[in-house]
Amino acid sequence: MLAKTNIIANNIDYYTNSVPNSILYELMRNEVIRYSKEINSRIIIIDNDNKVKVDSREEFIGDTFKHEEVQKALKGNSAANIYNYKEYGRLMYTSVPIILNSKIIGAALISTSIDNIYSRVEDIENALYIISFISTLFIALISFILANIFSKPIKKFTNAIMNMAKGNLNQRVDIDTNDEFSQLASAFNIMSTKLDQVDIQRKDFVANVSHELRTPLSSIKLLSESLLHQDNAGVEIYREFLTDIDSEIDRLNNIIDDLLTLVDLDKERLNLNYKVTYVNYLLEKIITRLKPIADKKNISISYKAEEKLQINLDKDKIQQSIINIVHNAIKYTPNGGNVEVKLHSDGKNVVIEISDDGIGIPNKDLEHIFERFYRVDKARTRNTGGTGLGLSIAYQIVTLHQGKIEVESEVDKGTTFYIKLPIDTNMV
Image (cartoon, rainbow, N blue to C red; front, top):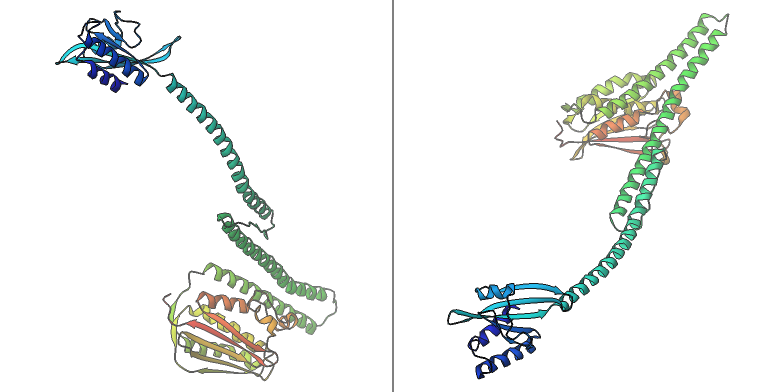
């Protein structure tokens, strides 16, 4: 509006000092009326005495105007203000000085209605209110849907976790999506399955330990009670019963020693005492130690080394592992049988091969023989004094050395164990 006011001021500056009814005055009047219609606003021209010279509506001609905007314009400053009249509505007044030859000779005042602007602003505000209301409803709906989508899997996880807290570890969460919840459910199911397996193993372990300990204790109690009820038993009877009690105590001690060994292995998982060990000498020492046990059953035990080998390992623990396997071979080989120990390498591993021509292991039992307390023939094992922990201990020791144990067996023909220990190891 200030720009428009400047346009009319510039267009009529030459005519402003003209006298009424003169040709120049009529030219100014016509220009003001024409431009007023063009911009749809009222235009008033005031001289420097505050007198109205031209009014596009020809209402205030000759009147004195002392509006704030006019006073500022006559002082050389442009001005603009908004007024709200009951009868006219909202009006904007803009005023600029009329300057001719660097001298202020009057002021141009334009009055225009801005109700349409306020009306448009109100329309925009109303539209924004409607949009805001609709957006709020839409956001609320989307939030409800998303909350429902997120809450369902969370509820599933919560229920599963609560059930696990009650002891039901075998819980599964099924989520048929391709998002992070599906990945979380997959990880949760793997965790719960493993926890359930661990829990089952723990229960089985406790049950097996209880059973294994109860058996010799029951035998000791039975033998003791039998002695107590024999008033006139001879020395030989007492000697026989006490020998059996001593045997059961030894068996009980063996079980406890093996259990403590397993506990120690778990604790020392990262504390193996690696040293460079001459494997040939270690095997010779083991054979010498076990030969008296083999001689009692008239079993031939032989040792053959294809090469001299030395590697980094925990000598004491590996010795225990090999002794357990060789001792098993002697136990389950009939009188007059053969046990053979061989040493060689396959390029990457030192291979200790322990073979016998004993009773063998059925195929269905091969995958379980390294489990704690697992017995192929429980009755026969107990008769030989086994605890069901020897192979488990051997397997765990070899695994801690990053090695592995492989087994080949055929029933009534014999069994061969292959202990493979890595040659190139940096675990010194």
